[in-house]
Amino acid sequence: MAKPPIFIDNLQYANYSPALFDEMAAAGLSAVHVTICYHENFRQTVENIITWNRHIAAHPNRLMFGRTAADVHAAHSSGRTAIFYGLQNCSPMEDDIGLIEILHQLGVRFMQLSYNNQSLLATGCYESEDPGLTRFGRQAIREMNRVGLVVDMSHSSERSSFEAIECSSRPITITHANPSWWHPARRNKSHELIKALTDTGGMIGFSLYPHHLKEGSGCSLANFAEMVAMAAERYGVHALGIGSDLCQDQPDSVVEWMRNGRWSIERDFGEGSAAQPGFPPQPNWFEGIKDFPNIAVGLAEVGFSADEIADIMGLNWLRFYEQNFSASAQGETTG
Image (tube, rainbow, N blue to C red; front, top):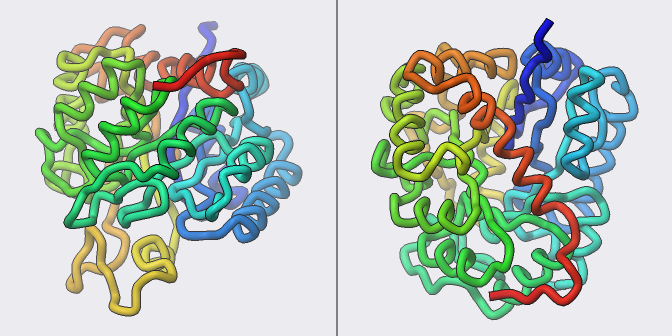
């Protein structure tokens, strides 16, 4: 009997429960990158880490800690899911560069430099002006490179993202977005940016969040898979993965927190609107974690080979983990 493939979803923010952990197992997910911060400070992020540590301790037959690529192999061999922690904002490091190493020691492996707005490090994609990386941001990238904390520019602006690619001595990522040439959402990324990212060893994870999809909740699996095929022609299969941005079972109050945090007095609707302020419905072929294997079916139907599907569904992320989660070599310099 053939061994099942390694599947990795490199970005989720679901309302996790034993039922969803069972869905991870049923979907064959060997690793999931889970969001543990949107606007939280360091102490609040630690509380979220404690919550996840308790999930993992309470479900040893389903979950294990994800720290390195070897943990993905161990999870795959034992039928479990390795859980990797990530930050969708730099707020947990506050204004202290020393907290970058502490966050990595606590298990964090991805950190976005901004979440839609201007941060101490970089400009967010919702700002009208784009001054790029700050001086603090450049030093933060160097420290992230040193300890093995991956730079994620999913919610950052164009200039900041180009400058992060140039500044970083290690490949960076956009964990959850789609090309703007397919669907021109504010959060999707230009051809030029994706090309610069992938030409330097970085990866993009394709998003299944409806606001990022052509035709939104009505996007078909064929349409999505055709986009992935076009991206493979432009950037190479090796640079592509999945970061579903799935918010399964979350109440609409969570999307309010994601969009508004503590920074806004006026209600901000982000990618939504006053008429549709909550989470949009997922496409019927990806309603939850259990549907992750459907993506592989769609990729096969547009002509990807079995090896290419295995790469996009998980092996590309696995290789990225192998190269980027450990401390940099002694004496390595930054760009």
